[in-house]
Amino acid sequence: MLSFESVEEVCESRKTTLVIHPAIRRAIKGYEESFYIGLRCFLKGESDGIFFLPLQDGGYVRLVFSQRHSSGGHPILRVDPLSSEGLERIKAAN
Image (cartoon, rainbow, N blue to C red; front, top):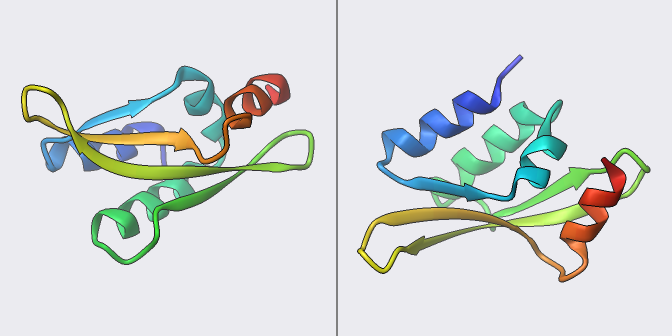
């Protein structure tokens, strides 16, 4: 099984900082492989950057990958809930 460290290694190999909320990081546990595949496809330009994160309550939250640059010009890969209530749903499910 893939670990979250593999996801971080992909970002490090591209000299990109991964920005992800700790609650989202915890919720991804058990789904690292599909998250990894989604991330790789997004970075290659082969997907729209949407990841459906299953929740323990049976629902899901759509996460979106986005590439940005810090104020200092460093590349950043952000992972955020697509909807405004997404993070609260993730926190409540864990």
